[in-house]
Image 1: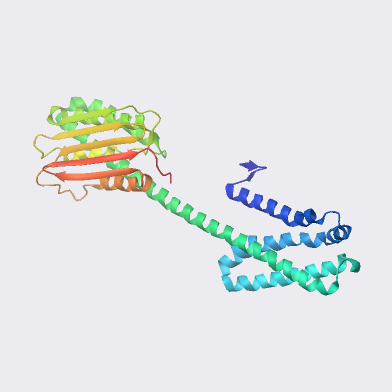
Image 2: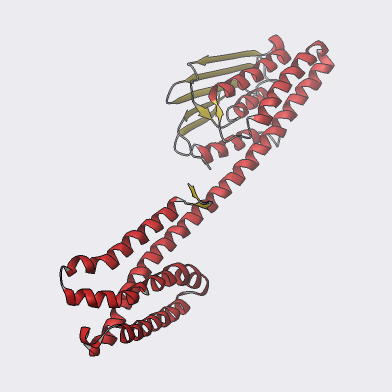
Length: 343
């Protein structure tokens, strides 16, 4: 919220309300207990300027000494300056009392005591308040720093997806131009649709689930055009995407991985994709045959490592991922809840 171009954050609102309530109580409490005591009223009105000197005392300690001196110079320098602040305001208040309060309203031998004790008491309150605010700000700073690191890492992971994906599709187009040139044009058109999604949607923090599923289906259709009947490609989507959101391009690396390692040297290749959507989350399964010799590509698994890390960052407590390789099959099972973190 902005007031006269001043950003009023939750932290500033708390501090403003604290000071408002505290000073109303500090200044107003003696008045409430005064009643009709004429002597007290004369004394309090005379001492009121002295009471107001407690405000800069409080603020100097909580807003300057603690966040600046204590943080930069350490405890020793802070305590020395705090002692100097107490002595300065104690002396100032004693001088003001001598000047403002008539002799018939106060016993003079109490002046030193009643100048030092209120200052120490108020300094103790301001110190407690100042350190609470200081620690909260430090924790907030650490959280913001952590969030910034997460955002930077996530941005880097997302930037890795696009080249990886384009590299795979361009290889597909080169293959089609050489072997089935009549399919190169529709594949290129499909690729342009996928690139449009990547450029304009994958930059967002989250994307509508129905768009992500459409993107996934377009990718599978593209692969069907490429492989024809050479690969048994199955894709089943159950349920309806309604207002759910998901991290962009989160599912595609699993499907890419299946096509990368589930065709070629694999006999009777099968790519089986099953996705079930509910209001709470989605179940996603990708299964493909693999070569008995395994994968000799040193760069294999980049896409999977990428998406696993993204899941850890964004869905730390709301996802379950199982990856199994057994009996000539590679299978990924992912459950994804629609609650997520937002770095």
